[in-house]
Length: 350
Ligand code: KG4
Ligand code: ZN
Image 1 (cartoon, protein in one colour):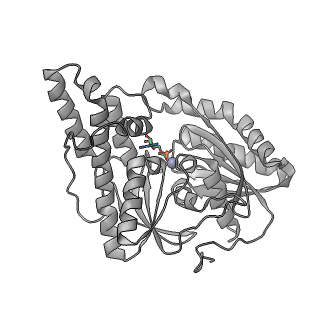
Image 2 (image 1 turned 90 degrees about the vertical axis):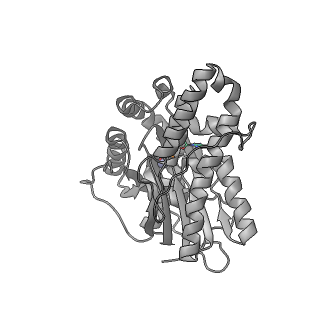
């Protein structure tokens, strides 16, 4: 298995093969094309329909995927200048995710493979998030993590510390025992009356607020595991008590509440990440997943890495949340190892 050697620039195996990626695990329908590890196109259709419900409604998500998938794939192929018959393999998210949503992507991929003769490659959504750190465009080279590296994977459904030993070998050494970090952002945002998804909204308000204004409870969990349910409760109780005294409390302190909450979540995340670095001795650190777009987390990791002389890797913001470019790229590394799926493959929720 190739790694990135001393230079940090991974050798590219020239296969000249186009891989179509399909992502439909939650509420984003996405398609992308990569060739030899480089992105040629990436198209994402987000589903606004969930906003009015304050969270993802699974039935509505699968219906929207059905409506979006054909135009999204067409747009990705067109942007890449690739015809259907030239696609060598179609990589798709098999799971984890919402079953009804996954089913749309998996069925589309199987149909595409049958119709065009392309090979099928199943991809684990979490693995793909980690590999988003290797996404790059031709002519825009960047330094990439070298193996082994640690990845803090923080999304709406997962919070994990992972050791990556090569492109296909990942070991989870810590994870949340209850809510995910993204869930903590989203649930606290909901309590403040902010729209879904709350993470990016809190991030924007936090930039204007004082992170020292409020203190919220932090977990005390053994090992490298995380917990966010206590923070959520502590946040909820603070708001309940303050709003009793002043019903306009949230409105008047919104930016300080967001800044203090974000600071607490980032501190919780960084505390265990630092512990993992101490315990493993691995000092190449990447982040991935939707919460990796968070300004507070990105700044904290870069600052600490500079101070301790670690190497920090941040995926571009557009590749932190769900996207098919990361699925196609994970498909590329599986293709190099001849890891293909059959027409009998089915989605897995967990
Ligand atoms: O990776 P992702 O798109 O979907 C899952 O696989 O879960 O992550 C979505 C999560 C949501 O919880 C969203 O609020 C959070 O990522 N998120 C953010 C930011 N952008 C997205 N959280 C904090 N700050 C952000 N800037
Ligand atoms: Zn995701």
